[in-house]
Image (cartoon, rainbow, N blue to C red; front, side, top):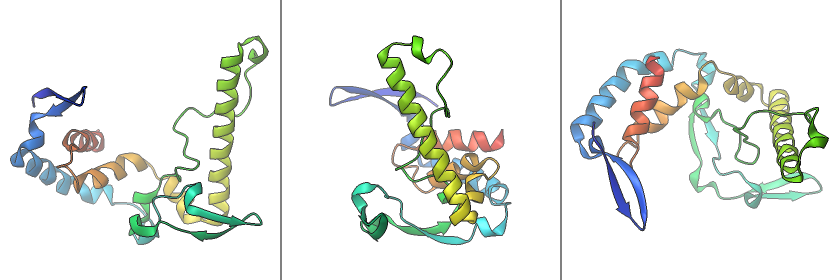
Amino acid sequence: MRIVFCLGKGEATLISSAQNSPQAHLQLLEKYLKVAPAILDIDPVLTRPTLWHGDLHSSNLFVEDGHITATIDWQGSWAGPLFLQSQPSPIVDYPGSILLQRPDNFNDLGPEQQAEIKQKIFKSTLYQLYLLETKERNPLLAKAFHLDHGKTRRLPVEFAGNTWDDDIVSFREALINVER
């Protein structure tokens, strides 16, 4: 695989030479078909189709008296296996390290570091509360959140259907992770 730089609009991006090779796409899809049964070898309840709204954020929710009364912007919704949808809503998703309390040296830190720590604590707490509430209100989704190698299972399926849109390298990496 050869990677080249592409200049466009003042930015340099990496493009794999395999991106434009139909044979490279087919080879990866054949590898995917071989590992797909292992990816799906999980509790059948996590592979059943589930309706999902993939664009939940505050602008798409109407709230009255502390209760959600309406959800809009359903054009991106779809039904698919629950384990593919096992990632928290963008409203609360926090990919950083979880921090739930101030470090012992908090008062010795500068204002910027303190603000950063407070923000991490806020996001971590919100994320943890979301996981706890999900466990109580939707145990199946909580089970999907805690699926062994959930992201490793999910990403190859996500990338398999869209390798032509500059995702062949991501798809290849996802398959390598499955193999590992």
